[in-house]
Length: 439
Ligand code: NMX
Ligand code: MLT
Image (cartoon, rainbow, N blue to C red; front, side, top):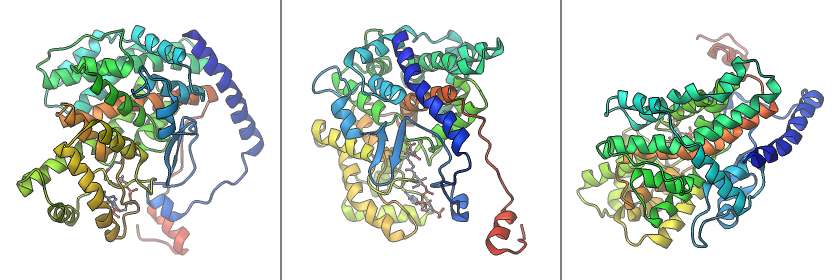
């Protein structure tokens, strides 16, 4: 496994040199203007972060090191010809920037299996929380509790030279990725299967093992989990979870701290919680309408009612995307291929016809199209994972791949502490109108 670390080091060292050169030679170069509108609407479109793992195009969607989801599904190694690519391969791609060989992927899988032992106290911390605490609360607590294991933190305390920070961060990241499926599955079995836990199977791949520990061993679910883990893994650096991890990591907090921050961000309803909210909202709708096969007119009226109540339609809209999310499309294709006539999936497809024109008519909504969360819940539900309050945890398992690959990069580049500037509202008003403001 050491060879993958070495390969990363060889590749990333060139980029580290490039980072230093840019900083030394071009720090004064102006690359963008910032408008008041951008500041007042969540810093949208301001280039302010360095993230190599993936880039989001508003019209085309996400590309991982230049590869679209369609390309990944063709090019990344898989276990069987008709299966989905292994997330291990995507991790390699995000980390090193090249499509891996199957051997590389299998080696990562084995390496993670050897690192997968979760310290008992992490389970004890989860068990100390009441069972009615949200799965994401338990998940974040479990991850945070494993900070006791941080190799980076120990290295830092012993005074390791800053040029080696990446090395112990790499070890932490590999350990965290290896352990996170067990933490997730433990919460699932604790909350929904009366604490009847299932041990990991080291012969399985990372996503297959997660399904196994949750109690699902069919090839259908493994296929779905591999797809799920690939499409949720990264969405450039500015989304709330990635940005939170980068920000906290920039203080040289250990990777467990940084990823806990990501997960508390992912738990928000405008971000990853939307994947459970979609199912919740659909069930609310079906209950309200008194049918599980609503007409287009009924669905349409319910959507308008939701908007009139000042609520969002979950699974629709995006801060960057301006077209249907290719992660939505990948799931739609998966459903077309493997799922025949499922009521919930049918409603997701029905919503895809009905919601965009309604959101467009509102006027202010920049993107009326569905995002990744509009589909994912219905697929999980179809395969028997019906406890939708758990769904965001699965998003969180996947997101570790991209966000933590980026943290290793942050450390090898030697990115500094992140510290943008803030001003009172009055300052912006003075800038805009040239007159003293009131507040
Ligand atoms: N339903 C109703 N209103 C919406 C929606 C929606 N799906 N999407 C945007 N709006 C509203 C938004 O709340 C805002 O209203 P106001 O001016 O009153 O504050 C207005 O439209 C303009 O928002 P945008 O600039 O289009 O979107 P923004 O970048 O602020 O927000 C989201 C992006 C994704 C937070 C927003 O589209 C949303 O709340 N969607 C529903 C929740 C969701 O699906 N989140 C998951 C995102 C993906 N993920 O996994 O993280
Ligand atoms: C994500 O996957 O992080 C979401 O689509 C949100 C985003 O990109 O802002």
